[in-house]
Image (cartoon, rainbow, N blue to C red; front, top):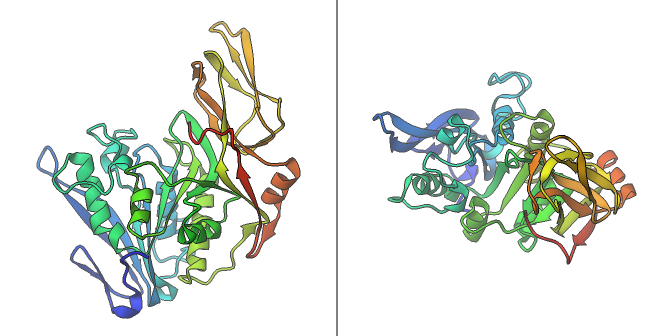
Length: 364
């Protein structure tokens, strides 16, 4: 488990020299030193500290500066739909909370301001954990987050979206071989869970190696707030908090859950302009035409067919494609089972189907 301290062990939660009293919330800054103009740089953190014993759960979003759906998820959890603290629509009642919720809405502040995935030094922070105290700019951000936030967590949920050229049906990624990670993944409540230990240097992989159960949500695309994806994230986090005993909640889980060790991308055989005929979340049959490709004048040059029967988990958005580009990520599933997964709920124990496509490519 992590290095979190249960609320019952202390009256107040101490973070970066700030004391947060039980039943309160507080904004705290994670200092990163001075910027180029001498102005202080920091990451905003919001902590909700409960009145009853419980675990420390951390939410991180915006590690990639262009991925905004997770940012909105955290905002709604802190302040509710009206974005005003301590009103009736708040999702979390501080005075009834067990444990502590640490919220980091935007890790990569400068990347978000530049509307780019990477940090200003053009490095991917999510390949540099646990970071270096005296390293480059991105390594220092990773180090500050990991040493001063993540290591004091019992559980971690990292919120992401697809890059700007693609979109993802909301799904959780977790290490199937870690029972505590799977406890979180099952509780979150998406219809699909993909097996992944995470790339080397990713926050999730590094946290799990330190004994902190961690899952990752992939939902939607970059550069925008997509409220369907946002509300899926909100519900999932609240489901996890209910499962951990942090809040009282009757969870709504899908009747069918797909546990996918591998999935397969349909790829373009030649370049051109892509016209998608399906979208993420659609069920397709093997051999079904899912996209067509045209030349610059709009004349069709070839079509792309689904290599299997299943559900589209990821879909290309950029019409400009080259030979070999990923077009649709498809998880094997029957139409009847997918309909049940979408339309029916189970209070606690969904039917599970394991999917292991031996021909699959793990990632695009």
